[in-house]
Image (cartoon, rainbow, N blue to C red):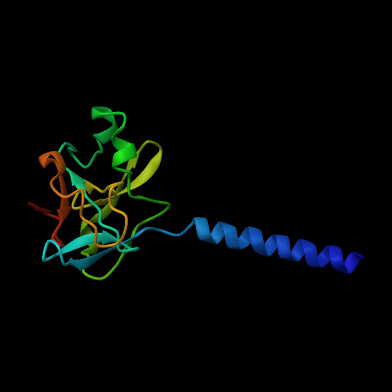
Amino acid sequence: MRRVLLLFLAGALIAVATAGAATSSSAVVKTAFNAKLKKTIVVAGNGKTVYMFTGDTGGTSTCAAIDPTCATLWPYFTTTGKPATGAGITASLLGTTKTGGKLQVTYNHHPLYYYSGDKKPGDVVGQSALQSWWVLSPKGKPIK
């Protein structure tokens, strides 16, 4: 009985340690060639497109302040630590800003967002929405 209890406790400790490790991972930012735009763009580590909003100023997200439903349509690209630099990304352009109590990933001082209409890697449905939402080049400039 004691041995079973020790095995159970050891398993529980491993599960807790593994869970803690999983939550401390950071977002990855990389580039990918987008066939629809015929350009290389900044994407999340999972390949999904990220966007910048022209209404953001000084590296600060203003999306939710402008429209409370904004964060539903344009979820923040967040991280739990320092974002990781993937292929094609300039490390000095990568950063974070505090948004709604979370760390939002930035690139060239642009807070980054997903678009809820993009369903898979390579989708760019949000590109040029309201002439305010744009994908970024590897240099951190909006592609219009």
